Image 1 (cartoon, rainbow over the protein chains, first blue to last red):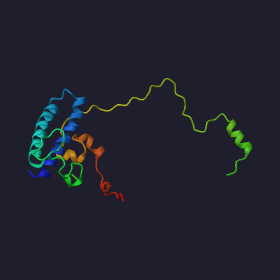
Image 2 (cartoon, chains in turn purple, brown):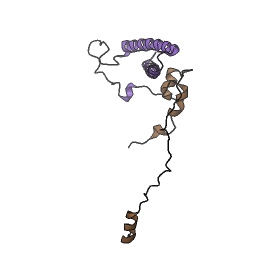
Image 3 (cartoon, helix red, strand yellow):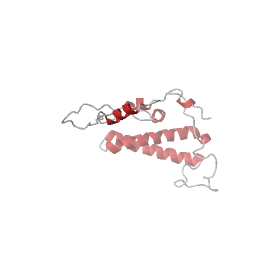
Length: 90
Length: 75
């Protein structure tokens, strides 16, 4: 996957996980939701690992860095050129 | 605006409040809000959820993106 494809998939999975997390707070016995959550947590971890291996750090405190220190490389995650466009109305 | 001093005093001395009061009803309970308990059926794909603002189709309409919202001019 390209950098943008990887970042978009990771962002989407992280968002989905956040919503599922909120749902599980009020539905702790929902097995289907829990299964979905656990599956996607694994996918998010794999996507994050792959992204960081290929394209650099996503978070300053949880990612190992190759030499030299990578965090100060542009663009920063909060800059628009770091991020992908969500095209289409869907 | 000129206020006639005698009529102003009359108004101030009146017992009737300016804001109409509701009819007094005895023995009523406070309002109880009720929201149906959500049940997960289908969900959107992660990318579709990201676009719509929720993973759950029954909640999607509330967050529906409207055309033109992204075209605001901040200059």
